[in-house]
Length: 362
Ligand SMILES: Nc1ncnc2c1ncn2[C@@H]1O[C@H](COP(=O)(O)OP(=O)(O)OP(=O)(O)O)[C@@H](O)[C@H]1O
Ligand SMILES: [Mg+2]
Image (cartoon, rainbow, N blue to C red):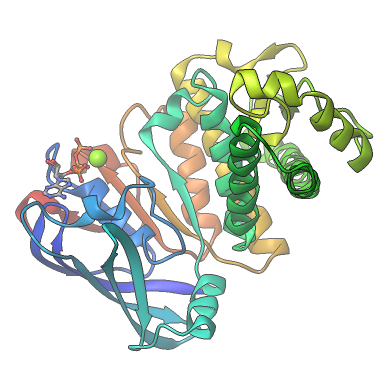
């Protein structure tokens, strides 16, 4: 699987001209606030499909006052090294991300790249995952699904487009019934598929979390569940469709579709008793780390995929248990890690041969 050998930035975010090589195993980026650590992780995440870990507008990747950015890197995939180039292309005011692999941007090359690279991401906001909005938790789970199925975002985009289309039709004065029926049928097919994939993902994670519990002397029993007032165990296409048809008038007034996987929440039940939002910030961080560890176990052992870990600001507020989980990830898997923190000392507990980069000085 993929390893990032080095990276170069030209007019990307706060970097005019930046170059560094990376270690195959453990890279620790440290430096003052604002020196560009998150930007580097984002630059790495842009090698995969999509808009990177900040889900940013492509235009914002271009250094202020500049015309375009360029990210270059060498990516090793099963002992072969590929040259990757990423930049923006402007079409009718819109900026689009372009990727070239060995100077080739054909569909086949891109699909090869997408199948070879996958990321597991920790962002500082995730410390409050269980207190933030349902959309944040849905995104978290959707990202994990995407890490093992790189076509998942196509499904999600199609679904979102169909919802927008349905709303447009409902808002129009004189609408075409056939067209609305077709769009609603499409929403049901796609929506059921999303429900199914999310369920599979949560079941997989729940099994892996059980297995990991023993290794880590983990004090909590965690169960992830979908919370959705519409969903029940045997929801089927016809029922879904008739629900949509019956709610046209309401949805027209509401300005959107009120049922479906875009309205689900993902909750985490602790010890069969209470919701994880009641846990402390540090304890919530433990759960997120355990879920990422569980997902990595699944990817490596069952999908034969080696994801790259991008952990932003992971160094701060790590107690003994959370350090142990992080060390376990580092020692357990032959994969590449990128960790960031403001201070080198935050990582003194990492005993293996880590490469340290002082980003403020590069
Ligand atoms: N398009 C851009 N052009 C120029 N500068 C930018 C652009 N986008 C972001 N920046 C700047 O890049 C700087 C570094 O941001 P980044 O988030 O990577 O810092 P960081 O090292 O992760 O800091 P922290 O420790 O606070 O998380 C910020 O000062 C930001 O304003
Ligand atoms: Mg940052």
